[in-house]
Length: 228
Image (tube, rainbow, N blue to C red; front, side, top):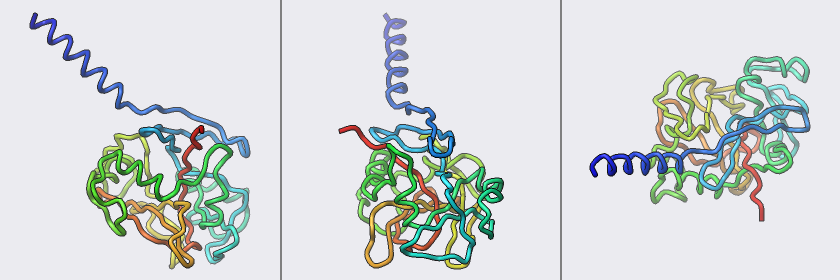
């Protein structure tokens, strides 16, 4: 009887682990043949790496609110062929101003809204901080989403398979924060010339929900359109 109950416990444990396991796979962006990993978290399917779609490339000094700008961290010219050979591009993908970000996800995918990010964060354990601005610590969301390697400071578990890397940004002073932080656009305007974004840094287990100037160049994770 004890052996039967123990076996039943083990079977129940395996079923529970399987139910929590995330669905993973790959898909190809037909525009450029780029192969992306994806991961399903609850009922949302997210890219498990940064968007790398690069139809053009801008110099670091180029800055626009309304026009589209694309950057490769550390590259300061406008030769698309050369920029695509950069190690930072191959590892971290491209950086986008907001106008480029909202128009660059492949067909069947889109730039996630602030609410879609919140849904994932609540599923992963965020408590009572849904509308808060600034650093949010409950649930250790950053710890669960960041890669276990590649950061200058890190204690992440990446238990979700989301695999955030410290891609830095194109900010007020040019290229900044590579190895230390990374940022992701949302599709949600925040008033004026700002939109909401998420930020993750190596020395924080949480994440940052903040407004950002739309001319900044930051990373993109697309989420799959849901069937209706």
